[in-house]
Length: 178
Image 1 (cartoon, rainbow, N blue to C red):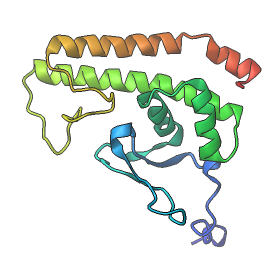
Image 2: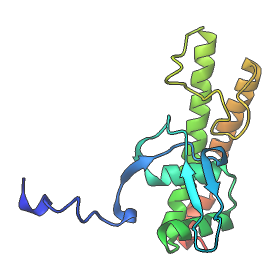
Image 3: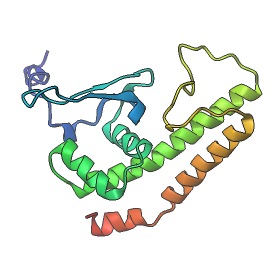
């Protein structure tokens, strides 16, 4: 092993310089458990559950999914990024907003894939669900009919299209976000 790479695990780059991390990919409120401290000396305990969709990915996709699924407003996103990175960086906000757009497309594609499965009467292996049958990433019940599935997929595509065509991204890139 080359000597310059020997200590890479001992001294990893700071989080903002790491491209890929382990992502939960479905970090909605239903997948976060918090336990209040029993005394002043005890800290708040937070645990994440339901890792069936976790994978190696771009940290900003996971952060954007958290923001999107929990319906954070821009001001809350600023606070969220400050807490995560211990500072606010305009480029982080731009990337978060762009990844929210990707999140809408991701969800729409999941719904359309599920529609194809239903249409073709394909059996889904329960150990690898396309869309979870419990409260899933949309924080609402799963679709009860093909019509509802189509409506939700159309809503996600419309959200994706409105975000992707939104000129605010150009404004963020030119003027920054504060």
